[in-house]
Image 1: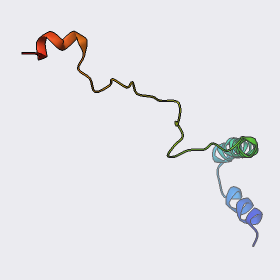
Image 2 (image 1 turned 45 degrees about the horizontal axis):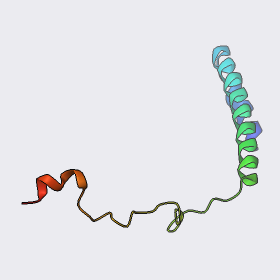
Image 3 (image 1 turned 45 degrees about the vertical axis):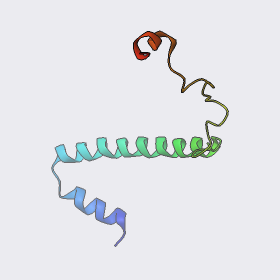
Image 4 (image 1 turned 30 degrees about the horizontal axis):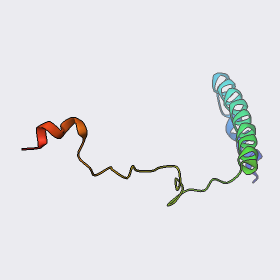
Length: 79
């Protein structure tokens, strides 16, 4: 028994209101599937991004006097 036959047998036993719901749901699935297919094709075209350690190398720096006391706090910290 094929899938189509099973679907037709199940639908034949349903009330008209449920059949209408099946029509709406099947349209939704078709639209969603075609959208997923387009999204997957777009993903294949995107360049791969590099991630992990070293990704920000050269973009972040620290001042040479980072560990030195702040000038504003010199009065407070010095005895």
